[in-house]
Image (tube, rainbow, N blue to C red):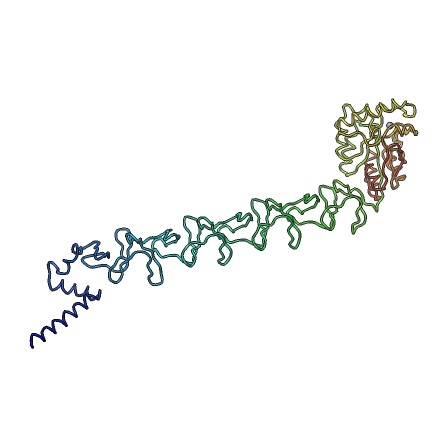
Length: 502
Ligand SMILES: [Zn+2]
């Protein structure tokens, strides 16, 4: 009976020991107690391949431990250069580790804590260098590049909305900055922040661009409070005169703004920009009255409400002509020159200059004969000889003819093959009047549509012109070339006809 009782007590003790051995924490305590009571070779260690070291790694039953002074280590441990984590039982942890709200990743083979960029199970993650903490929902900078790590820790690629719009390289997730082409559209990301810029002008390398509301670079016409035009290819804002879809426009230099319903003065010339922004051509009504503009150059030719007058100079070119040309340039006045062919050789530069300045170029025969006394052949020779000399310089034959001494008849008119331009105000400048006298007389005779004859071979004429032109202007006259004179008067100049005034 006594032995039976003992058996029960022993059984209970053994049961308690077994239970304690099964629970890991109590088992460790039990082993310590055992080690304390019985030094030397341990009964439990017999099961192990070798005893745990005083210091070092220890593998047992598929788990790894680390011992220091025979103590199994727990928590984070730095061993040599690497960090490891040992759980409550001292087991070295591998793979993902969640700890106090942070996530870590430990090398699945050797348990070393990883940091920096890591590819884990086919996905890229970023583990903070130094701490190994998995970065979530935050920006990071790595080697000068910026990345955004999403809620699951993997970097964002492509468009990213995060207190602004960003674009992350679809290949490596780095944040793109500056001008970028994405799916054939251009965008601009603020350097330094990478934030998409929208609804604003952008100046880049001295060129101006516009970023639309959605950030796309604007191209072609842009309507804001004013209109602008941006190069359809590059998006560069265009300025000055521009031909857009076969139409001419003027975009204000500096601002690029389309100018409409206003006058434009450019290099001493005037234009009128109509309601749609294209410069006026031909006869145009403006809020200031009716004006005549050149069809090609769009230059203002004349104010149709004011008188026009024409000054013509015969018998040159002469050595005096350049002085007159200088004055005409200064006054921005156009006249006509009727050249004697024989005067041209040696004076080609003068002819060229007159033509390029926009003066009318006329043929005044080769050597000044009386045309009414010439045969058809002689007329033809006089005209052709001088025309060829003029054409060699300007590329064009003379558009106009003036017969020497004003001698003409139906046959002459027919044979010269150009409109003949005579005069209705004769300066008689060859009679030796003083410049002052010439000016006074011509001013007295001046009238709308008149053609005045003078000669740029007389010094007095040059001086008289300098006095006369400002006076005519003061009286409201517009001094125009023959082409403009005819256009203003709405008269078509015809070959075979003679005109004395328009
Ligand atoms: Zn003459």
